[in-house]
Amino acid sequence: MGNLSEKAAFLKGLLEGMQLDTASQEGKLLMHIVDAIAETAAAVNELKESQEELGEYIESLDEDLMMLEDVIVGEDDDDEDDDDDDDDFEFIVDDEEDSEEDD
Image (spheres, rainbow, N blue to C red):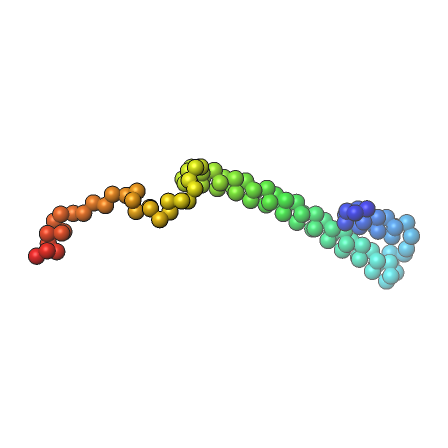
């Protein structure tokens, strides 16, 4: 009986088996308490399922991001040449701008 829903169902069965007068104040109170416990158990189960779905979705996004990173950065990039990034580009200088600055 580790499941909260099972425990709520067990309590409801116990209450019905006790044959309490549900018209009495005590009977009404106990019935409402057991109903609240059953609703809480159902809500907790829904949250648990949602959390599991979100966990799977996050894992999927993480895998997609890793694949994208491998494509963009490259699988064999060791981050050794981070300081040499400027060497990968060739800068083009407009000669007209240089000559105007010299004037």
